[in-house]
Image (cartoon, rainbow, N blue to C red; front, top):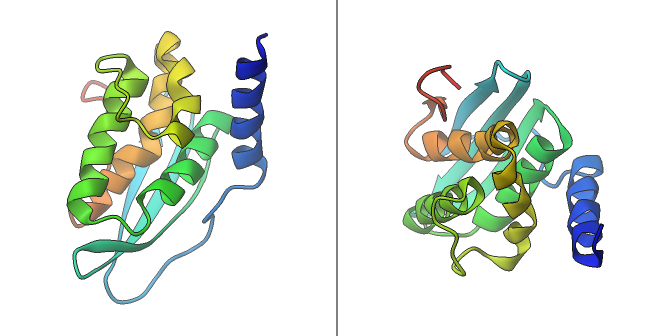
Length: 152
């Protein structure tokens, strides 16, 4: 394993063991959406508080593998404070990058540690689950989907 791979692995494990923004978020302006991957059992609920067209706060709760939890944790840090349109654009950038469909330098450095999942299609679903839930929460909540054939 290269030094860079070890660094990426340690970042993912850190976010898995000590997830940021792993808490309930309620109150006025709070929207939420849930995501579920029946293939592996990952479940996540993303809560987003929108004020003046910006992501004022964001959190998540759920269970899942290290990649799912780390991705959710990193996502909350990445979108907090962004205008809603930029958060939605970041979703597109992240999704294109980790699926390998559109690898780009526009992907924030802190999120690039998850690029390696593109080599493992089943892990892509883990990495994108919270992002799909965040996107759905920004669209006023409801179930999140990232695979039409499985309802994930």
